[in-house]
Length: 221
Image (cartoon, rainbow, N blue to C red):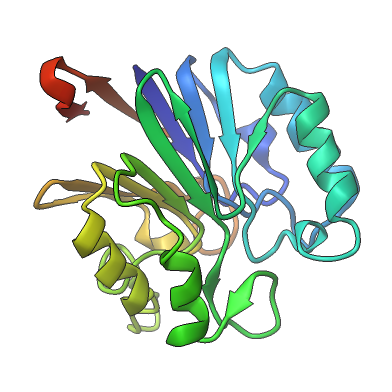
C-alpha cells in the first residue's frame, strides 16, 4: 500500500504535485485562517487526486473546524468522499490510522490545549494498536526545531508514542522541520510542503506500508 503524506499547504495546494497511490494523508493547516471558501476549494482539489482513500485532519490555522462553522466545513469533506479524523480512527486494508488536530497551546490558534493533563486526555484516546498516527504538531525533540532554536514539540505526545510504538507518526506545523527520521520502530514524518515564509518548497512524502503474514507491519521508503 502506497501512502502519500502532505501538510501545511495554507491554500497553496494547487502548487503541489502528486504521483497518485492508495492512501493520501493530510496533516493539517489547509487554510490561512479557517476560510470556508478555502476548505471547499481544497476538498474539490483532493477529491480529484488519484488516490483511493483520502484522510484529512485539521490544524491550528483551520479555525472553521473548531468553531460554529465546523458542521459546514466537515460536510464539504463528507460530500467529496474524504475521511476527516478528529480524535478518531479508521482501518484500511488491515492498517489502523488515528488522527488528531490537537497541539500544545500556541498563541490563540485553533485546537490549542495546555501542556500536561489537558492535552494528555487527547493522547490517551489513541488506541495502543495504532499503525499510522496523524497529528498536526510533532512530538518533543523530533523534527520540531524552529529557526529561532527552540524545540516546540509535545512531550506528552512523545511519551504516548513511546508506549504505543506506531509504525508511522506523521505531522506538520513546524515548516522548517520538514523531513523523515526513524527512531526504533517508528518512522517520523514532518510532511510540511511550505517553507518558513509559506512558499512551496517540499514535495509530498511517499511511504510503503504492508501487513505481512502473522500481522507484521512492514514500512519502506
